[in-house]
Length: 217
Image 1 (cartoon, one colour):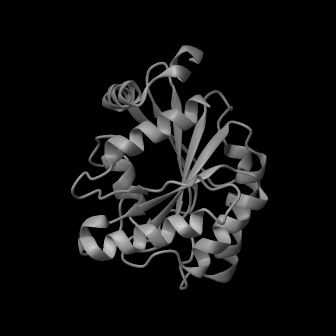
Image 2: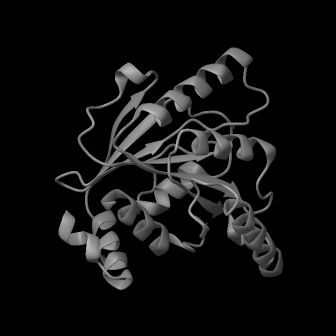
């Protein structure tokens, strides 16, 4: 894969488009670290508050309708869900449990946090985390906590705004600028954010390219 490292932006975007147009499949769910798959491919993890639109984004990213389960019930994802991209496998996408769901039982929420924290700190093949933020709400205190957790774990991450079609263009520009300003304060955060809409397909080419680029680093 080293020869791919020199891909120009246009080539990277096209390579990512081809990759995500090919085989993508569910691998397994891991409720505990002992159930993680062998570290045979670079991993990109997706994090976000419950109901931020993570499953919808994963489905749109991979051009699949039901790869990741979507639900109107916050907190449904309670495990690390693994998806493999490419044949042979080039990338594994990791759908992490949603955080910040106030109605979750405390012991369950604590278990989720330990699982995610231990995964982030101990997974050598983890190349980058993508922190999903709802465009309508911006970065909340619970998002700050997760970003600090990633900073402390020295895990490179990038902020992705979701549901950009749900607010006015002027409001989107404002929340984008505010979010970029906040990201620049965090040592492990990529300074540029990605604005997306699963419903409209906005930003998907850029997101696919960012995932591939991170996997190649």
